[in-house]
Image 1 (cartoon, rainbow, N blue to C red):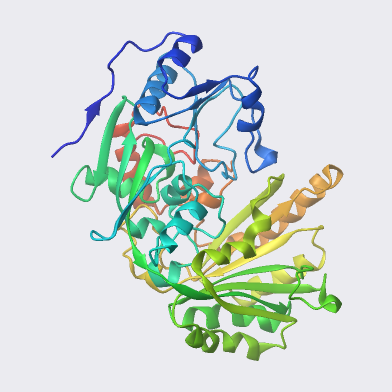
Image 2 (cartoon, rainbow, N blue to C red):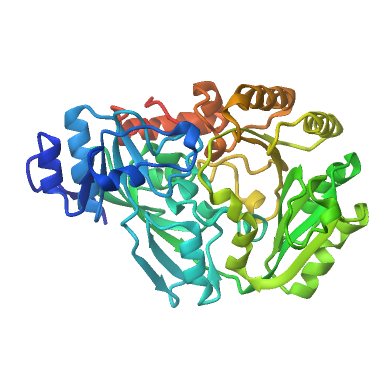
Length: 463
C-alpha cells in the first residue's frame, strides 16, 4: 500500500506572517526573544542567522514550511539536535525547519519496535528504553538528535554488538520536496528507504523513525586511561577488533582529564582515554578489557556495571556548545606509519586538541556494503581530529595543525563518515560513498528531489 499523503489542504502562504498563521506550532523571527536561544547550534564556529525558525508541531507543519520555502525560493535548514559539524542546521538567511517539538515516543514491546519523533535526542530515547531493558544503537553523546545521527548511519556504543542505528531502522515517515508525507520501509518506497540509511538529509524531512529494539540491560562501562605510547596505539585496533562483539571502544588521545578517578599526579599527561561499553555480563566484560591493561600500566581504571544510559556521563563535556574544527578518515588499518604521524602531531598539539580513535568490526561489518547507503562496512578504524577553539587568537594555528595531521593520514584513507564532515566540498562528499553507491543515491535524489530543494546537507546532486 502506498501511504503517500498530499498535505496541500490550503494555499501556500505568500509571506512570513502568512506562514506563521498557517502553522500549528510557532514561527520565530530575529525580533522574537525566543529566537535568540533557539537559533544557537552546537558548533559555534558554524553559527548562522536564519531568517526565521519554524518550530513544527507535526508533519503538517513541516509540509507547510517546506511548501513555503520552495515557493519563496528560500534555502531550508533542518534542525533536530543541532549537532551538525558543518552547521547545516542553521545558516544566514535560511528558513529553519525545527523538529524539537516532535517528541512522540511509542514503545511496542510485543512487536519489538519503537516509534520516535525526530525531535528527540539519543539520550532521551536511550533513557526511556532502558526502563524496558531495551536500546537502539545510537551515538556516543546524549544531546545529539536521533534524526541527523540516524540518517548519516549512526556509529555509537553498540556498533560491534548491534550495528549502526540504520541497521535497526524499520521505517521512516518523511515529508518530501513536493509536500507529501511518505512512509519508507523495505515494503514501501524501498529505494527511498535504502537511501535514508546513510544518505543524510538529501531526500526529505524525516518526522518519525521506527526502530527495531535490541535487548540491552546493565553494561560494563567506563574508561581506561593509558599512557600515549607507540605500543599502546599499535595495540588498540588489534585488541579491540578481536575482542568479543559485546565490547565497543572509543579512544581519545588527549591530556589526561582531572577526573575524580584519575590520580592527581597523572592529570594533564599525554594519554589514551579509552572509553568502552561491554553490552553483556559485566564479569565477562572485565575479561574483555584485560588485554588493554596488559599492554601498559594504566594511569587509571574506571570500569563498573551501570545502566546503559550511564555511559553518557563519560561524554558529557562533549555536549557543551563551543567553536571547533574537525577532520576525519576511515582507515583499513591503523598501521605504524599512521601511528607515528598521530603521535608526532600530538607532541605539538594545540591546547584541548584531541584525536579520536575508533575500532570497528562485529555486527557493523557483517552487513553487505550495498545493503544501505552507508557502505564503509569493512573499515577497521576511524581517526577524527578535533580542535576546540579556546582562544580566538589561536584559531589559525589550531586549524593548521588539524589540517596537517589530516594531510598525513589522507593517503591511507578508506573513505569518511558523512556525519563527521564539515563543509569540505563535493570531492569529500563523494569519499563518503563508493562510486556505485553515489550513483544510486543521485538517481534516487533525482526522483524525490529533482530541484535539489534539500541541499543544505552533505549534498547528493540529482543525477
